[in-house]
Image (cartoon, rainbow, N blue to C red):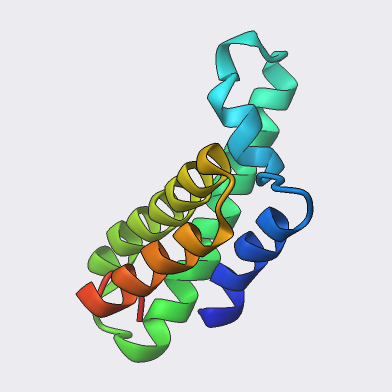
Length: 106
């Protein structure tokens, strides 16, 4: 999970860039339908991966893991966007640390 959140930090460190799917998702209504579909698939792929990681700890909590995976993906994307807006990678790191402290991120 630490490496997952670090990928988003690395993107910010590369000239304050954002996850492409996050950027495209924000402009969803302006995108061709086939691009919209791919952006959704990317998010769902992330959620499935996160769900599998969460299931390693709590295999009997399938529904809870699904909801938590969505929340984690949304939270990480949101943290990246806020840090990008303020041009401050340390803000992303601070937000992610807070997610860990609160239990959202394992």
